Image (cartoon, rainbow, N blue to C red; front, side, top):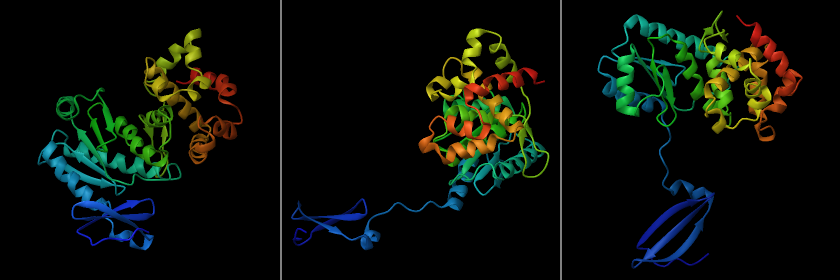
Length: 311
């Protein structure tokens, strides 16, 4: 260890598990010393995250952005549901009730981890208030229904067409925490499954057939469409390809793969096995075969027959 000269200024930095103390004498950096891990407390640290403080700050922010008459409910300790003044009291209550029932089911032997930090859920009662907010604060939302913004941890939603978008968007911050390496097609497939949620009892949730089916069926009528709409293609798909020219079709594929697996009581076994073994199974094909008993390519014909029978 280099001897220390008389200190005029001493700065402490964390490097790995040790502290590096840089001492300046007469304005010249001239001596360094390493310190043991017991003295790490002396280093400057960022303040620990405070969930309650964050929730209060988000309430204040929502009132500023949405209006003083904004209504609030906290669900699952982390979701701050904020109903804009454009949303009626009764509609807001329905939205909160659905959020409670859906998230309770999501965390009932499906997803293992809740978001570690608060998530704001902004609900607008009509498309005009929704679009106005999107244009002002996000440069437009890109969809008439709703969107989840990762960085501010904020869901922004037009509730007027229905609440299916709410149960969809709630999935994204959960997957982000529970399976951060999940590809876009899996994330969007599970989220899209719950655009038309069926909650028969507390703690249980499924997805019913919805408006995404016709596009998938049209693709299956042509050779090129069948090639694109194959499970083998889906499991080898990059996030960039998923978001490309055939994004709408790939949403439909991943959504109806999730519904097919759920109908066989295999969706959550597959999801959890892939999540827990991602380091050795980047594509998810191993998890799929272990749960379904077939490779994605081998299961494709059975899945296509099921899709064609849906009503």
